[in-house]
Length: 325
Image 1: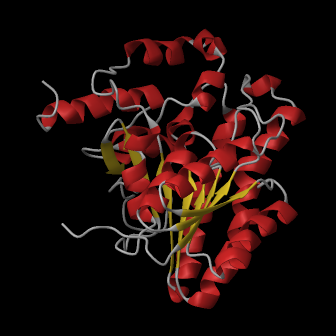
Image 2: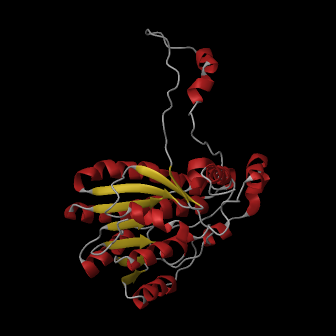
Image 3: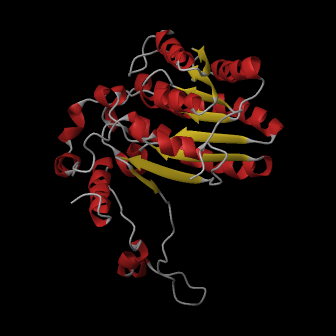
C-alpha cells in the first residue's frame, strides 16, 4: 500500500479551528502539507469572532514538527476570501489544496426563516465557496495543479427538517463543484464534494423543534445507529477527505458520503425509466401515471428520505458485508 503524502503541497482549510476542519488540518500537516488554518472563531450559530481557535491548531501542528499559519479572515466576504488565499501565497508562494469547510447553523421552520437566518447561512456556505474558491482556482490554474473539496451535507442530499436555509447552501455545492471539475479539467484541477457525518458543535447547536414533523420524527426514532457507536468523530471523515485532495486521487466531479466508517459515492443518476411509444405524439398525463413506478425505479440504489434513514442503510451495509452481526 503506497503511503499518501502531501510533501511539497500547500493546503487551505477553512473552518479549521474545530471539528472536521481541525482534524483535516492536523492530518494534512502530519503528512507533510503546509497548512493555512482559517477560522473566524465564531460560535456554532455564527456570532462573535476570536483568533484563539485557529492559533491553537497552528500551535499543535508546529509542536508536532509541522508547518502552519493561522488566518482569521471571514470566508463570507470577497475581501476575506482573497485574504485567506493570499496568506498561502505570501507565506509559501502557492496553493495546491482547498478544503471549503467553514459553516454554522441557524435553524428554523421553512415558513419562519428570516433574512437574518437565511442570508448569513448562504453567505458562509454558498458565497464563501466562490469568495475563497475563485482566487484559489486562479492560483491553481497558473500552476497547472489543484484539488478542491467542498463540504456538502446529507441534510441537503436527503433533506432535514428545520434546515431549509442550510440545505439550500449545501445543496449548491454539488452544482458548483461539478462545474469547477469540468472547467478545471484542462488545468489539472479536480473538484469533489464530501458529505461528512460527525457529532460536532454544529450538531449540538441543533434545536429539537424538527421533531414536530411526524414523518421526520419517526425517521429519527427508527434510525439504527448500531454501526455508528464511537464512529461519529471528525477523524472518521478525515481519510476520505484527504484522499480526495491527494495527488493519488484521480476522481473528480463526484459526491462522496462518509458515515460511521462507511465510505460511498453518492450518485444523482437517471434511471432506465419508461420510453413513450414511437412517433411524434407526446404521451398523456395518464400515460405517465400508468408508468410512474417504472419511471421511478432505481434498481439496487438506497434512497434515504432523511439523513437518519442513511444511518439505517449504513447499518444494513455493515451487516451485509459482515462488519456488524
